[in-house]
Image (cartoon, rainbow, N blue to C red):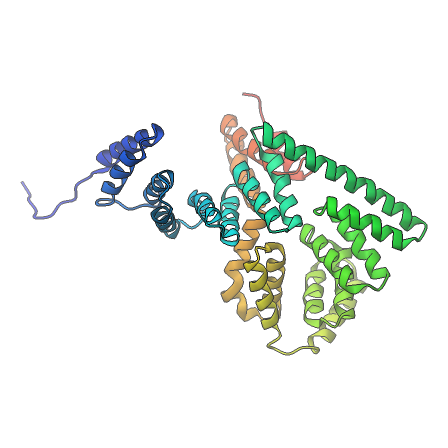
Length: 393
């Protein structure tokens, strides 16, 4: 028989039993008992799930300082798919630190955008900060994903529906005013429309255009930027924004806007060459350190939880200085995950669902296609593809 002074003992069964015992105590509301087991497990194991469970126990016991400590330890081990972000947001909300609360909830949203609690937390927090664009953005997400259609849902839906109705009504009035070349009245109607429906691309786009026609560049800038946040591939918005930036002497922003525009006009040789010529002209209008101002604006917007504008400015920073990719590239990707996590999940679900569908495992494939249908717009090609692949089994 071979003997050794050293051996490895497999304690996995024992650890699993402890975990199940702790979970059972937690579900019964005996958080102290669950916490004792989890803390004992730290002697033999360490994982983001264990830290998360310890944090949850402390949270339920209203001991927020150790709860925060363990949630942060959990995040340090798993920085993306981690439910700790929701609780960290809750803790900072209780501390009345809305900025940090929103940042943590945005991380939670990036991981699970159809979590109605996270959407509602973000919506109400942005409302408290007076940021209506962002607030309505998340209220609409909440209404889309809410499973509980009870009291809060009904009241919010009624309010949002009324705002949508008013927004559309005054948008139509503005269009009629524009048709008779009454821009002053159109601006009044559109301003009222955008207050009620701030996340409408059409309203922001048209209001920016009318202000530009009236040579009011500063107001045009506000609404064209918001329109770009809602559709960053809009040819007309990018063209008009570049004109506004040039009008106000912001040549670095004009240059960045033209760079965004260039790939969209590849099919039009005349427009492509014109854009390329303007890019070269603008390139001589600023120096190699001009990116710093955009980096500072990105940091400011990020600190204010204005993630749409922060993303725009950080992208401008990289456009102006490729070398900044290392410093701000990670934050750009983080902000993209904050603002449109559905795109990443939809793509992954279509790929996985397609593989299972090809293998004939329709039951499992249906789960992925159903997720795509939940997260995507009903008019999108992704929704239609997923719907066509769902099989009754």
